[in-house]
Image (cartoon, rainbow, N blue to C red; front, side, top):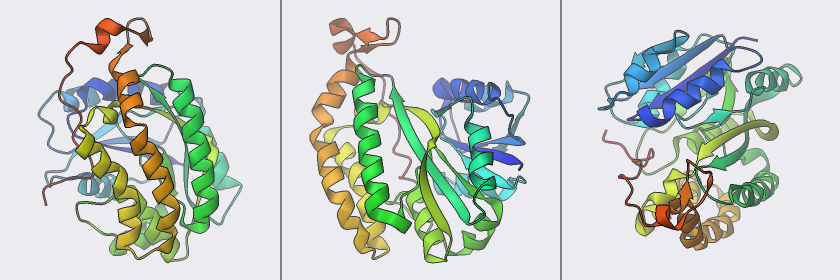
Length: 281
């Protein structure tokens, strides 16, 4: 199976290089890699152009949903993989995608587990996150939520569902995609064999911004009038309650030593990442 990987980006010069290096290190190379620049004002495009296997596209209409559409529409592989610019996929990620779809003809889309980097005691967060994802996958059943940082779907499924997708702010576009897939009879599943690491940088958002982002998951399900959103509320409350600890561990992480540092904790940081669920239409 030919695997196309699509990465929507906005001002991701700091992280995109490592993401593309992880793709270059795959045991099985993807058929194509498409980076969609969504009006970046930094050197994101230059980073993408530094990798000869990357096909760089530009989407002028602001918003991750439009950048995603642009990349998915341009993909020519049998399977479309979706990553974020800070996704560091496991070396066998492409091979795992091929295996998952080859062994199950009924599978339309799959999302996997994530690990975290850029914070102290990340192993603890990894363990908690996996436990929560397993629980949600079991409770949500066929309405499992997909995560754009680590997911893949059949090209035919994308073409079938594209006209029905929502294109608005205030919701998770990856959740919306999975919801519309299941509503039209396609099967979406969670599989731990698909693994990617992501930066824990979103914790640097302010308390109100972080709460808003966390609540977008059940809100997306609520906008589609899905009762299964009730399973998300306890998880969201737990995640919000962990905000002070997670922020403390992230602020104090010294990337040079890969350890916690009190000096690093007191060092001013740059502006946090723009919420990808927010866009100007």
